[in-house]
Amino acid sequence: MTGQNGRSDFELIYGVNPVKEAIRAGRVKEIYISEGRKKGLEELFELSKKRSIPVKKVEENFFNSRFPKGHQAIAALVKKKRLLDTGGLLLKVKNKDSAIIIILDEIEDPRNLGAILRVAAAGGADGVILQRYRQTGITSEVIKSSAGAYEYVEIAEENNIKYAINTLKEEGFTIIGAEVNGEKSLWDTDMRGRIGIVIGSEGRGLRKTVLEMCDERVFIPMMGRVNSLNVSVACGIIIFEALRQRQCSKTY
Image (cartoon, rainbow, N blue to C red; front, side):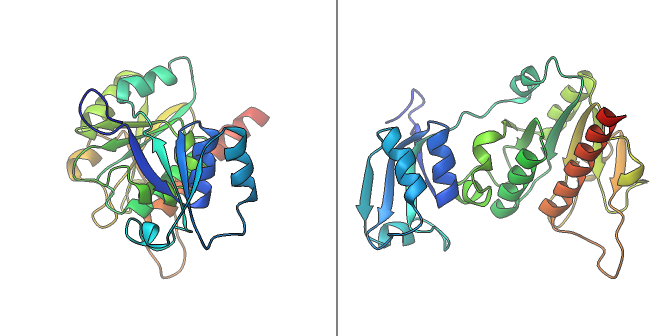
């Protein structure tokens, strides 16, 4: 099935958790399971039965030829999730005095993007903004790496995140850039209110032109001999520090 633009409205995803969450989200048209896969799918079968979703048995090569290792011998044909733009994402938080939006500057590894979506969902972020070019897009590997969190995170795409940053600033967001050589410790930074957290690429970090647009440039204090973190780990620490501050401010 194709849309008016001639592109397919459906895509294949794989992995037990992504398929289960896609079923719950109402996106699944058809499920594929390896003929040799028998155990650990009781909940998935129950979900598919309740929603009258057909389940087809296929050969192992169906998965090996389409997906990387770790496919768990299960896949689904799903309706593509509609991505927003910055304006659409801002409408979602229009009446919120406290909001967290993650802005990604040229993340290249799909597994890192999936992990970032997972910590964004777990930490209560209101959305993630991606750059359409020079960055990994939404792929089946990203969705698998998110462990189902893809279904619960609002995602926006822009040709250039600098436009998104300027738009967020106009709407009263404080833009906080994560930088190893930042000027301020994360622990000393006010992460409440409406904030945009900018995360740079795995190897280069934030581009200079993006860093210059940030209202604050913060670093994560670290001990020991290791002086850097995986980008998704760093993003998780920052998101959960923001969550901690918001929870504490409600207590007092």
